[in-house]
Every structure is written in C-alpha cells, then in structure tokens.
Length: 460
Image 1 (tube, rainbow, N blue to C red):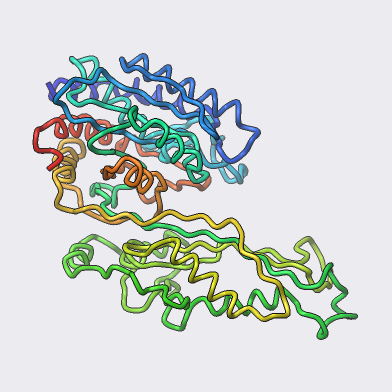
Image 2 (cartoon, helix red, strand yellow; image 1 turned 120 degrees about the horizontal axis):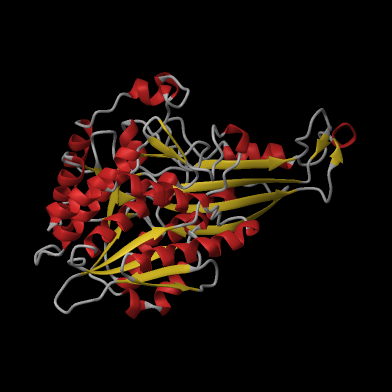
C-alpha cells in the first residue's frame, strides 16, 4: 500500500504546489488585528480543504484566534496520533526587502517564496498531502487528530485553555509536529530537545518628564545611562550569564551528545559568512562549540532598547524613562519560574535607588528533552530514509515551541518533532522560502511515518 501512495505523491507534485499556493495567499498574520478577517478566512479554508480529503474538520472558537480540529474515523485497537501545526504567520515587514510580494507565492531557484512558506504552512501542507493520498487508498492506518492553531506566532496564549477544555477530543498516544528544520540539505534531522524561554520587559523611571540636558545634566539620574550600566552586568568576560543561580539546575551535555554533534558537517566560516560576519566575530560561552551554544546552553539576550529621542537630528534631553526587552533561552532542567524570579531579584539588587524599576510582560515556556532511543524516534528515522533517501541525524533545537510543553503537561504525551525546513529558509524574515524538494521529501516522509506509527511496538 505504501508503495502506491509514494508513487501517487511523486506523480502529484504539481497539484500539491498549486494547493500550497492557495494556502500561502491568505495573509493570516496573527499579531495584527487588521488581519482578523484573514485569520478567520484561513481557518475556514483549511477546514474545508481537510474535509475534501476525507476527514471530519471543524473550526472552533477560542479566547483568541480560531482553532481547526480534524479527525479521521477512529477504530478500536489502533494507536492515536495528535498532529499539531499552525496556520498563522509573522508580519511580512519590511515589505521593500521582498523580491516578490509576500502573499503572492513565487517559484524560483527550486523553492516557493512567500510568508509562511516554511513556518508553518508548507510543513503542514506536506502532512495534509500525505493524508490525502492515504485517504484515497483505503484510509490512514492510525487514528488521527489534527490540531492546527492560529496563535503560534504570538505565543499560543489561548491554546492551553483550549486543550484543557477539549481533552477528550484531543486525547492521543503521541503528538507529532513539523515546525523545525533539517540539519542541512541532504541531511534531515529529528529534534529531540527544545530550549525554553523567559521573556521580560524592564522599565526604569527617573524624573517625572524629559529634562533639558544642559540645565539638569549632572544633577539628576539619567535612566538611559543607568539602564546601560545595569545591562552591562548581565554577562561576564567568559560569555556566561551573570545572574545569581542561573546555572544551578542546567543539565550538562553528555559525552555521547557532544561526540555525535562533532561529527556533523559544520563549517564555522561558512556559518559566519551567511550572517555577514567573520569567524572571529562569533561569540558565546567559553568552552562550548557554536552548535552546543545554540542547542544546549542557556542564554540571555537584549531584544530591544528604548529611551529618549530617536528621530532625525539632535534633541538634547535627559529621558524620563528607559526600557528593554530581554529573553532568556533555557535548557533542561532549568525551571522558567525559578529563573524569572532569580533575574528579578538580581536586577532589583543591582539597580540604584535613584530610579524606579518595573518588570512587566513576564512570559515563559519550559525546555523539553525526549529520549533519543524511543520507538517513535526509530519510526521517524525509518520514515526519513524512505522520504529523503537519507538517514536523519538527531539534534536539539535552539528555539522554543510553546505547544510542546503544553501538550506534555495537559495531555501527558511527548511530541515527535520531524521538521522539513532548511536553515536558510529565512523564517520570520523577508523572502521566506520552502524548497520544493523539502515539500516533496516531507510529504513522502509523513506518509511513511503514519504507516510506521501504526505498528504495535511504535510507542514502547
């Protein structure tokens, strides 16, 4: 049966690309209220498309954007797989940097270019096409539940409540998601770990209003100066985060992991050049390689700074307020609530009494690590061999998927992360793309994976 399905996938590539173009034309930007009608339209279109391939699909309301849930005909005795994806996308700005308009999909150089092409519409589409061909050939061999949300790009804020109130609908033996990357062209990857995140917005307040820097300079606190001094204390000379107790619970890398990652083809000069840097400009925690820093070490980064006048020309003031957005990527076994508390305690102790410090926007998500030798991973390895004609490597991912720990805590199941994107897909940036080879290989991999997960020992 699988051979017939793979042949149908091979012969249906043109039709698959045309369908993905329809998906990508809908500007489902979740963070901007001006796109609310498009968000609803995308959810409705997606549910309708899923119904056409033979599943029961419904658009559910949530506290935020709509959620699409679909199911095939469940049969007793078969394993149940919960597929997760998202249909929302990042804003396309800056528009002038796109070669072709972000919501007018264009094919060039063997890839499809559009906002959401790789993150996550193209990867969701690969699964939908695999499911379509299974349904046309007697039906999927597993019980399937699809959960496709519209808020991933804004933190999935409504999803925990939705999952909790629909536990029976979403109950499964394993979750499956494709929102990560291959390691490189020709080397697919399974991600067995994700970093968590803590996000804070810190505001310092000094005088009641902006002041003339000539009249008042040198006699009142300058919050911009104070904030710069405070931020300068966040790292030591060896690149370690200088927060009391920050590393207390960090799970060290195993020797086996470090050896496995050293064998990966990684060209540091090429990596740096792709970012417009030289190898000498790469920085990070001493004693760790670039891959180890990205995948398995915690970080603290300034994401944005605001204070004073920033328009053209000069306006010589002492600003009344200064703010900074900071994110920390966490690794197993760091607890986000504990880290958030330690950061706040450290900053308050270091902040001088001459200014007022406030901390807002405190959000977090825990890190995830799943066993590398589990049966689901073995099933995915064999599926990649069929889909991409290559044995995948096992990696961690430096990013965060909020839904993975939510699924773990609310439904009690792990998530298998099988990504089809590539590191150069420019997700969240202008000229986002998804290689057509990745779309095709991902579709074949998904088709094989559903068969492999149907085997009796796939969840042991």
